[in-house]
Length: 250
Image (cartoon, rainbow, N blue to C red):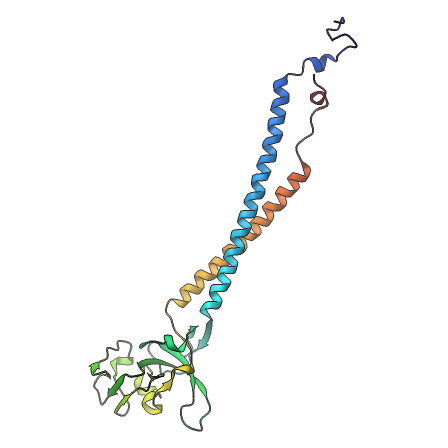
């Protein structure tokens, strides 16, 4: 051994000889923790991004399935359910899914030679149904009085008597304001394939929920991008370099 306490062959720096092994291990543990921490951040960014994209795509797809369209009420033939000037959100519907009581938009000519136009009416009867009414009595549907709480002022007719059986593939429609509506009482039944959309009370709520889901998805994608940038920069920077004494410690 030499006078400085090193091994034969040359002196050893006193600083090196005093470098505690536990300090080196602590430094290595801290560097590894940094790597793991930023690795977890990168994975979190990836997961948030995937979830965000799925939410956006799902919201867009559901909105397309709903096929919403907005119309403005122009007349009072559906009062008090819908007032003139009111905006209404409608959902696309297949003809075979139209049901009694639905409020639908359909395109039809009110009379031979008249131009085709859009109408908003309530479906009273479908193919095979017998529907009748006369005077102040309620509408009779297949021999039973039809409950109609939506009627303007409780009126039940306001038009001439009628008694008809609806042909298959057609519908009998009337306005809720019977005294102010030109409908199947004058035109007769209307083909179901003229229906373009119907009013579904839950449509607006569904669209609000879809919109909120889409916004949440966009926010998640933005947060994911920010976290991804931070994680990438940290990985490029890497852990701090070992001190010179730690790299050469015996």
